[in-house]
Image (tube, rainbow, N blue to C red; front, side, top):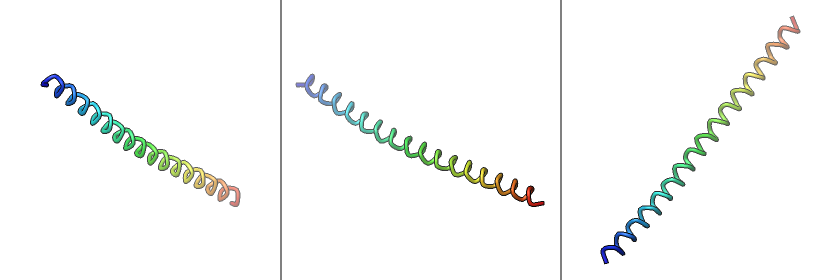
Length: 60
């Protein structure tokens, strides 16, 4: 009986660990996606600024 209880506990702990791992992976993916969006926006803004500076220099 104790052996069965121990096996059941091990299975429950393993399932909980898998679920927690999936949640953490999802959180990491969300943070990575947010970082990629921020970097992309920064690159776009830098490109726009460079174009504006270039046009301003051409107009002078």
